[in-house]
Amino acid sequence: GAVVSQHPSRVICKSGTSVKIECRSLDFQATTMFWYRQFPKQSLMLMATSNEGSKATYEQGVEKDKFLINHASLTLSTLTVTSAHPEDSSFYICSAGPDSPLHFGNGTRLTVT
Amino acid sequence: QKEVEQNSGPLSVPEGAIASLNCTYSDRGSQSFFWYRQYSGKSPELIMFIYSNGDKEDGRFTAQLNKASQYVSLLIRDSQPSDSATYLCAVYINQFYFGTGTSLTVIP
Image (cartoon, rainbow over all chains, first blue to last red; front, top):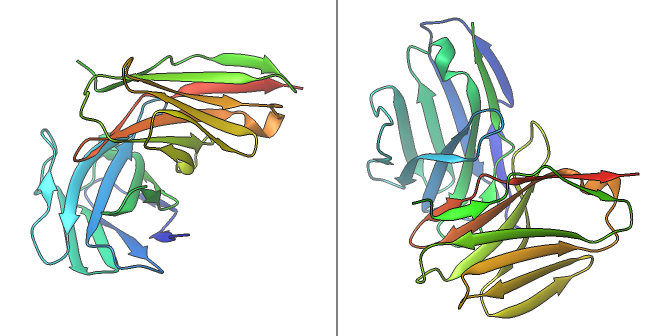
């Protein structure tokens, strides 16, 4: 089946620094990638949808200048958390589409100290 | 109004029993329905998807869809301790909507 690779799996950074998370589709071309955030004991919250070669569409309440998304190729999308703060600590998960069902990357546990 | 609703649980069943997980959705235009399993600290993994009314079986798992009543359920037969996880229901209506998940514990 479809495989989505996400890297890194875990990152700890200091407040004010930026962190880049990569999401790759390994055996198919993903024209659409989705970025989710999940806080403890809560469900997945869609942050943004990125389409290859165009600007990402952000969900209401998600700061596009803080969460930079680049989808430069059909196999790679990146999420950069800029000037991270402790409240950005969360589990970030990407998934690739557009065909359903969605397959998820393994997630990135971000801890901002 | 939430698009997808699940009972958060926790749901506890003894090993070998049938676990029944339920999900309701609000949009009658929903076309695709998915069940994901998520272990603590891990990302969701797809268990099953169903598009048509009725039952769909895959091993120990059976998904049931009733579009008239707007619910989809997941039955896990012969529950095992390794089935202990959070189960997420998802509905596709132009985008994916996830429920908050039901926590299942299978007691040995």
